Image (cartoon, rainbow, N blue to C red; front, top):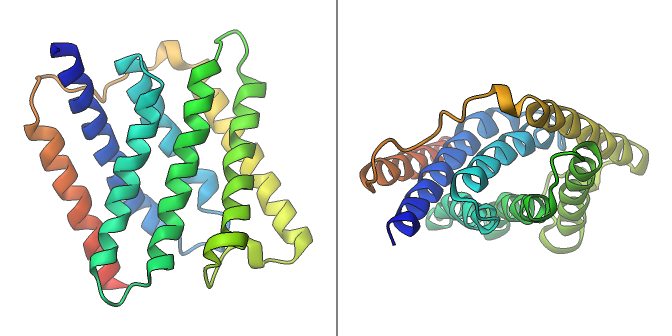
Length: 207
């Protein structure tokens, strides 16, 4: 039971940190042309989810992380000036990322790195772009670009994300997983979650 509680605390903590990253780094990067923010934010999301997987030894941690980070995005639904689709579109991106990373950690073998990461990076950007085009249809999005530009940006996303994640996994033994809860308590996860929600709301109100 103790380990289960610690796992929940870890997932809440890292999920909230991912939410903070989305509401800070992601907020700034979304001023870039459509499609470019993902090549940075997907490796960041991967880092948090992979940390959660390593610390809990459960592939399901990636799915729970996605729900937490997407839930932080969905707080914007409380704001009357935000359209539902405008909020659900980035939340869907996070959920798709978590599904892709869940599949990755489920079948990942350390002796084979490049191909699994390449497939994971490809899966999330392709599925998300199709989701935008078919379901959410935001006012700005990669799916609105001319076909040749869209393919180029998708390819750039895949290659850049794959490169960053492969380097990280190759150097994994030399990197300390510092994002750990030192004490078994819900205080720090709850505080981190509160900061993430406040930051997300602040960004939305600021436009």
